[in-house]
Image 1 (cartoon, rainbow, N blue to C red):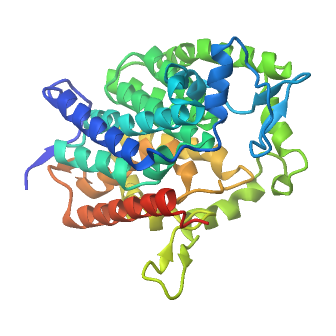
Image 2: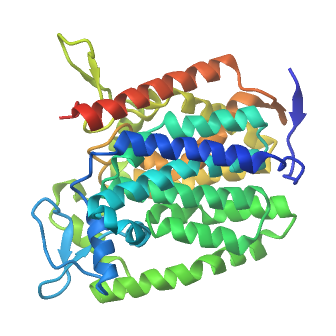
Image 3: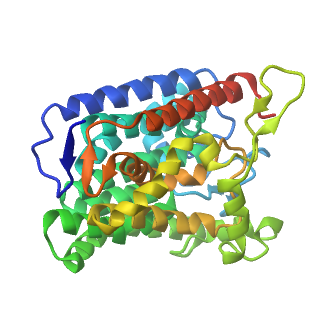
Length: 407
């Protein structure tokens, strides 16, 4: 089998790659739209907020009882607690209705991330067939499929963040403009705040690829994200009267899950159980005896191919790119695994999406990268693990969205 040695990204691989990326992204977008179409979410926080923005408001004028995470922010005003980018993206789609607009944003962003991730994996060093397998695994073999297709508010945030985190990974892996990395991560953080933690790791990767000093690169990455940080601080002042995100603090107040505050190391055991041990439901006397579980399922039960990420860590001894990617995955997950809840109403462990571009990169390198040399194609075992993941996630997505097998 043909092998090639890993090394700093160059431009020689670029020919024809955008066409493949567009095809992969378009395939995923169409699939996500089909899987989610006709099942609008009732948790349309972002769609309602988009309508408010369109009418010059940052608050909602109604407080439906099922939207229990709206917070009072003035007389007759209720504010959405989450960062606002998914709502901004939904504005042009409001003619579809608030719920469908939010769903479509989730489906388009989640699906499009597959094409961007393909390019990022190529820039990372993966050969074409390895990168293509990784992109398809991400799009169809992880909880990103259900999360994006379903589109409820928490899920839409993951889908939007996944797209922009993948953009940041691509720029860093190519040794591109540091400010562009900061801008992309800033946009991702305006959907999912935890992804902001990857900034040092992507600055390290970009500096290595570009042959630039790390401190200077880090400063430029941060500078690229500062304008969006200012925007978010201003948005918080409007909502809560402080630059900090007081909304999450208010949501946690009095909730028994948050018995040690928003973040605590004491929450680690519940996350480790959710990641490694949470089983599916077993249903007797029916053909589908395994059913997706409302509380989630173990990450590696949902996507067994991600087990290869542990093998990928071995490459950190030889490759600065692998080291930076592993660090990015770890940093993205720190706010998640120290958070009070593990994310209910989900397929798998959805917080993993915050680190998914990097976990997939580690998985493909764990399979195809040995001693600094890439195989040209993924192994049969990795393909089997990917096929199992894709089959399960498609089955579970259809079962939940179309048949309500969660309930």
